[in-house]
Image (cartoon, rainbow, N blue to C red; front, top):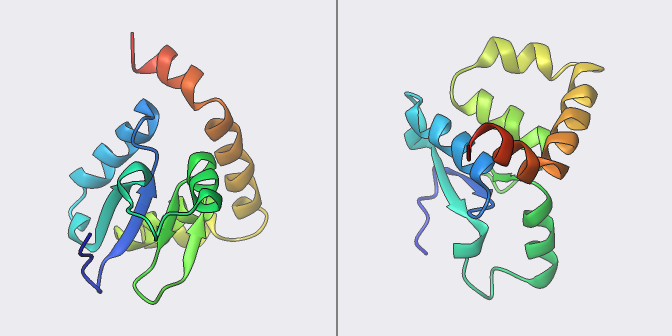
Length: 122
């Protein structure tokens, strides 16, 4: 997999319908070229380890061009920032809102299969 150095890499669960909808939304945004979405199932070994697989199964990961990795709610906020939603990012990143974002992310992530069946796969 050849990854451009100036792109953020968004690693997501390619088998999750809810995740797929989120990626479709990201791809519709104007600044999409700044983010490369990659299903974790397509990340080759040796880059993918069993530990990373478990991590990617639990939450979306955003690897910034400088190498910093954001996970879960932090990754979602990072995507908003990259896509130009600076005001939303700035407000939501403040405590206690960022803490609430992480809690909501975890709730959605743990129940994503049910949410997808209910809202998407009717």
